[in-house]
Image 1 (spheres, rainbow, N blue to C red):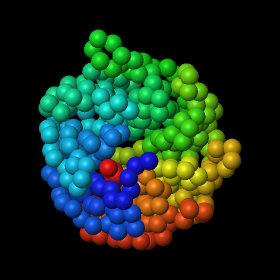
Image 2: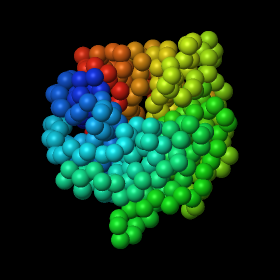
Image 3: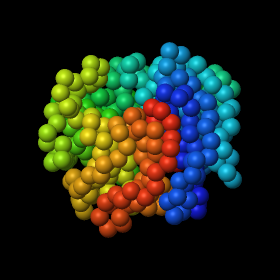
Image 4: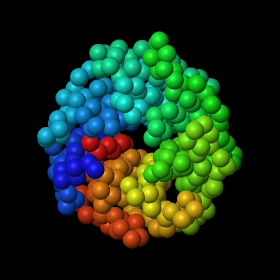
Length: 349
């Protein structure tokens, strides 16, 4: 069980081109620690399983992956290297060993694989690039480290890849796909606690699709899709951006499950809310309630204890902590501190 006496929260500030760090105490107190230059339009973050290393992708004119070491005592970040890359990644993930980095490129419609050690040496040459994934928006690795799943916002599909090793390093071998209804817009993905289900958030509807997953083959079954949250009834369905919509539209972003698996949370940027979904015994979800949060919330995170949710907003210069009610999953404002500009991603290390 991770030590939650004091954790470090890292927030990407795209407009400030840096990472802000904060100390999160066991009682939910959030205290600023420092600012660390990263690069223009820094966005997705990926941390190693042992919390000793952090990687950030920048999405400016010269995309890069920036590697940091994390001080296990005070949580300070030490910049190790910046590696130029060819793709602008909307999402970064590490495999469970920490040896391999995976990036999903929205504009490049692709999945890229990297050797993390090479990135730490400043070499951003990919081991493999898999194209044909329309508006790839996320990539995560299965708990057993055998499969990777990529959400394709533009084709309403989730691709499954087997992760295989050869003389060149890691290779992604396509092992099928699962489809959701047209106009769903799969954005971010999370596994259920036991790894036997994959949960996907719709950017365009703010609904959740839950797929049963065969851990032996990696294949996904048919999706169960939640009802659309009632609080979003005034909004039109969203669509892939750009262009921006001409009327207020659903614009869901991040997805996280509570550590006990009982609740799922989604950030919705048009209404600036965090939406909670309650899990049923059969593994499906239903909308439960919503909480106002920082303006245009793109990213958030839940601490390992499941007691605290930390959120930021792209149009807010504050970072907030919410207490999670253990029985209902309801969020209560607990702490709020100044942050940076263009805040879009939260990682807890």
